[in-house]
Structure formats: C-alpha cells, structure tokens
Image 1: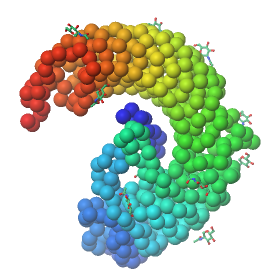
Image 2: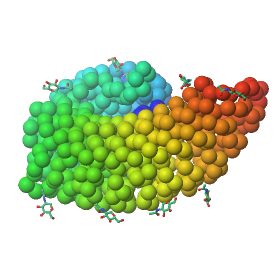
Image 3: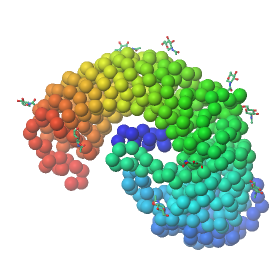
Length: 501
Ligand SMILES: *[C@@H]1O[C@H](CO)[C@@H](O)[C@H](O)[C@H]1NC(C)=O
Ligand SMILES: *[C@@H]1O[C@H](CO)[C@@H](O)[C@H](O)[C@H]1NC(C)=O
Ligand SMILES: *[C@@H]1O[C@H](CO)[C@@H](O)[C@H](O)[C@H]1NC(C)=O
Ligand SMILES: *[C@@H]1O[C@H](CO)[C@@H](O)[C@H](O)[C@H]1NC(C)=O
Ligand SMILES: *[C@@H]1O[C@H](CO)[C@@H](O)[C@H](O)[C@H]1NC(C)=O
Ligand SMILES: *[C@@H]1O[C@H](CO)[C@@H](O)[C@H](O)[C@H]1NC(C)=O
Ligand SMILES: *[C@@H]1O[C@H](CO)[C@@H](O)[C@H](O)[C@H]1NC(C)=O
Ligand SMILES: *[C@@H]1O[C@H](CO)[C@@H](O)[C@H](O)[C@H]1NC(C)=O
Ligand SMILES: *[C@@H]1O[C@H](CO)[C@@H](O)[C@H](O)[C@H]1NC(C)=O
Ligand SMILES: *[C@@H]1O[C@H](CO)[C@@H](O)[C@H](O)[C@H]1NC(C)=O
Ligand SMILES: *[C@@H]1O[C@H](CO)[C@@H](O)[C@H](O)[C@H]1NC(C)=O
C-alpha cells in the first residue's frame, strides 16, 4: 500500500501550469458567431473515431463548434486553436475504477486543423497504433499531450517540425497494481526512439516527458537535451538510457526544476547535475547505484532549492548523518529499500521541513530518540522493515500533522504512547504490525476520527475494544489479530454510527 502511494506522489508533483496565450496571427473566414465550416466537418470526422460512450462529447452538435466541449477558437480569426480530447474517466489500472476505453483512432482530419496550438489526446486507447506522422504538420502547436494513450512504435521524427512546441508529453507506461507483490507494474507497450536529433529543432521546449519510451539506441541523448536552455521539466522514467555520461563540458539547461531519471542504469550521481542549482525535484529511484549516503548527501547538498529527493531502491549504504538535514528546504525524502544502516538515535535530530520521510526496508537499528519530534512538519513517516528497537518516544507528540505512521516489522517494545495519539489527531494510517508492543490500546486511539487503517497485529497488546470504536466511521482496516485482545466488537454500534444508515 505504501509503495503504491509513493509512486502516486511521484506522478502528482511537478505539474507546471499551462497558459495558452492567444496570438492574432491569421486572416480567417469566420462567419457570424459560428465556427469555420471545414473545421467543423473535420471535428465531426475526428469525433467519429474517438471512443466516447456519449457523455463527454455530447455537446458536439449544432453549428458553433467553438462552443463544443474541449474545443477552443481564436477570438479574432475564429480558427480552432485548441482541441482537448483527453478521456477523463479512463479506466484506472491501479484503483480498478473508471471505464475501460475501447479502441479509438486518430482521424487524419486532425491535420486539417492547421491552426491548432493545443492538442491533448491523453488517456484514450489507440490500441498500440503508432503516433501518426501527420502530427508533425500542425506547425503552430505549443502543447502536445499524447500520454497514456496506448501508442506504440517509433516516435515520428516529424514531431521535430513543431518548432513552437513548449510542452511535449509522450509518457507511456500503463501502471497496474500487482495484487500479489503489492508493487506497481507496467505494461510493456512502448514508444521507441533511435535518435533524438529531431528534438534539437524544438528550441523553446520547456516540458519534456518521454517516460517509458525505449531510448536505448539514443546514444547522444544528453547532448540533444543539453541544447534546450529553456527546459524546466525533464522526465525520462524507465527509458533504458544507454548510460549517463559522468562528464559534460558545459551544462546549458540550468533552468531545470524537475528531473526524473528513475529506473535507468546510473552508476553514480553525475557531477554535472550539481550545476543545475535550480532543481526542486530530483527522482533517481531504482537506478541501483552504489555509494555511501554521506557521499551522496554531501554532493546533493549543493542543490539548495531541492524540496523533493527520491533515491528509493538503490544500493546506498552507510548511516544518515546530521548533515543530511542541512538542506533546510527538503520536504520529501525517500531512501527506502536501500542498505542504510546505523543507529536510529543518531539519525534524526536537527529540525527539518520534511513532510514525508521514507526509510522502510533498510537496516537501521537501535532506538528512535526523543529528537524525532524535531521533524515536526512530518505528515508521513515510514520506518517499517528495519531493526529498530526500544520504545516509541513520547517526543513524537510534537509531530502534530502526522497522517501516516508505519513502524511495522521492527523490534519495538513498550506501550503505545497516549501523548502521540492525543497530539497527532490527523492520523489516518497507523501500523505497528509485527513488533513487541504491549499494554492496552490507549483510550485516545478511539478518538482518532480520521483513522482509515489501524494494524496492531502480531504484538502483545491486551485488553478489550470499547464501544467507541464505532465512532471511527472512516475505518477500512482494523487488524488486531495475534494479540491478547478479548471481548467483542459491537457491530450494532459500528453500523448505527454510519451516516445515512
Ligand atoms: C486498449 O485496447 C486494447 C485492445 O486494442 C486492449 O487490449 C487493452 O486492454 C485496452 N486498454 C485498456 C486500458 O483498457
Ligand atoms: C517535416 O520534417 C521533415 C524532416 O524531418 C521534412 O522533410 C518535412 O518537409 C517537414 N514537413 C513540414 C510540413 O514541414
Ligand atoms: C498530459 O496528460 C496527462 C493525462 O491526462 C496529465 O496527467 C499530464 O499532466 C499532462 N501533461 C502536461 C504537460 O500537461
Ligand atoms: C529497447 O530496444 C533495444 C534495441 O532495440 C532492445 O534490445 C531492448 O530489448 C528494448 N528494451 C525494452 C525494455 O523493450
Ligand atoms: C559548473 O559551474 C561552475 C561554476 O559556475 C563552472 O565553472 C563549471 O564549468 C560548470 N560545469 C559544468 C559542467 O557546466
Ligand atoms: C551547450 O553546451 C555545449 C557544451 O557541452 C556547447 O558546445 C553548446 O554550444 C551549448 N549549446 C547551447 C545551445 O547553448
Ligand atoms: C551541516 O551543518 C552543521 C551545523 O549545523 C555543520 O557543522 C556541518 O558542517 C554542515 N555539513 C555540511 C555537509 O554542510
Ligand atoms: C531536538 O529535540 C530534543 C528533545 O526532543 C532537544 O533537546 C534538542 O535541542 C532538539 N535539537 C535541535 C537541534 O533543536
Ligand atoms: C503536544 O502538543 C502540544 C502543543 O500543541 C505540546 O506543547 C506538547 O509538548 C505535545 N506533547 C508531546 C508529548 O510532545
Ligand atoms: C492481519 O494481520 C495478520 C498478522 O500480521 C496477517 O497475517 C493478516 O493477513 C492480516 N489481515 C489483514 C486483513 O490485513
Ligand atoms: C492474556 O490476558 C489475560 C488477562 O487479560 C491473561 O490472563 C493471559 O495470561 C494473557 N495471555 C498471554 C499469552 O499473554
């Protein structure tokens, strides 16, 4: 569950607001309030090939196509300049909700909408068809989004003709939750790139997402990227990059704020990366690089705008030193599933701005000290699957906004501190599974009205469950198995307290 959430975070952060600035460049043949007739006919042809069970495009009737949902026209010329055919209720392969999109086709009539500046076909199902080459004739495009649309095959080099493009999102990858492993997996439908030479002609590019495309043949990828001085976000998640050059003569793309190179073979954090001092978000998940955490941290210490650092699933060793917290801007730090060792008491201490700290699946030992409470902005703390012992420190009661706390699969003893439950009233997920927690469940547990998941299984907790458990109307999981808990849950009470029942 937590792994899923981490990937979810990855997908959410770093969205750059898009502003389509109108420009009056054209002399159209606009008739009254309605749109241009041949463009209207083109739109109807496009619609005929798009899977839509009626709901989203039902407004596509009548003469004035400029009023249709997802269509935008230029005020002066009347030409269609925006087409948003994103399928908003597409099936979510992780959560299993939404509608399964049946196959659609990109109708060639799109190429007659030559004034388009904004085109979004994301979240449809083009059932593994290639991206049509005629997209490259839409010369005025500033925004092109073909992400998550089941395209397959080579990325046409004609896209390089789109010299006004600022946003290019060709993200593939269709995530689904493997119920057995709990991991997010991806369908292997991929776009392919043999070289990125075409990219050099799109000089004003600000946002580029080629995640899941196979770039293994693009040997000069970094040189091509390095020409893009206005680039703000670069996402190359799982692209089979043929190595990350450790040297680069001069970094030109120093405006970059978001860089995602996760799941590529990177042997170390390259030196040139440190010159991109504007970086706010850096994702290097699953790159399997080795190295001591102190070395990595010292190196990244130069990036003093960094707020989000994801190094999960690498082979980082050594302990956490206090200097890791010297970067006072850091809000999101994921170091889980590495080989980090050392004593918990020495790791946490200096105050930080951290909102998420994930260290699950490492080899951290010893006790968590009272200093943990100095990370008082934490909303999520994951320390499961380590070798942490001792008691849960009362000082954690300083973390007033804590929503998720996972200390499962450690060797923690003692009682659940009442102080924490009283102060962290926002808790939604609490897991202390597989530890040696004893004593009774404190009464204040049942006052945590936001609680969705409570897992105290496999401990030495004793006592009963009060009727007030029925107040926890958001509870989805309550696992108290393998303890010494007696009595019965008052089901009547539970159901009676649900709204509308
Ligand atoms: C997309 O369509 C193909 C058939 O062309 C189908 O196999 C696939 O499951 C569909 N994708 C989704 C997300 O439904
Ligand atoms: C698009 O680019 C190709 C080269 O990649 C070129 O031959 C072609 O003329 C261009 N097409 C248009 C419409 O500009
Ligand atoms: C492209 O579309 C996807 C899915 O609709 C969306 O999540 C993503 O933010 C879009 N990309 C850009 C650059 O706006
Ligand atoms: C990427 O392309 C290369 C060369 O065509 C191929 O050998 C490799 O298997 C592809 N990788 C993936 C993950 O499909
Ligand atoms: C990095 O920045 C330093 C100082 O501004 C400069 O001397 C150096 O050449 C830069 N290195 C690269 C690879 O851009
Ligand atoms: C970018 O840097 C390289 C050296 O790495 C340099 O040769 C090139 O001229 C620069 N390109 C631009 C567009 O600034
Ligand atoms: C981190 O800050 C401490 C003082 O709080 C300082 O002594 C130490 O040198 C700093 N470490 C780094 C790597 O900057
Ligand atoms: C961290 O917290 C402890 C007690 O909880 C306190 O004594 C210590 O001064 C704090 N450290 C810093 C650097 O604020
Ligand atoms: C609980 O929060 C209050 C501030 O709201 C603070 O004074 C108190 O020290 C906290 N309790 C613990 C155990 O940290
Ligand atoms: C409850 O906890 C036990 C022991 O940790 C585990 O075996 C079981 O699968 C859990 N049940 C649920 C529904 O999570
Ligand atoms: C469980 O609790 C009861 C009293 O509440 C006690 O008598 C018994 O010894 C406990 N069993 C274990 C295994 O701790």
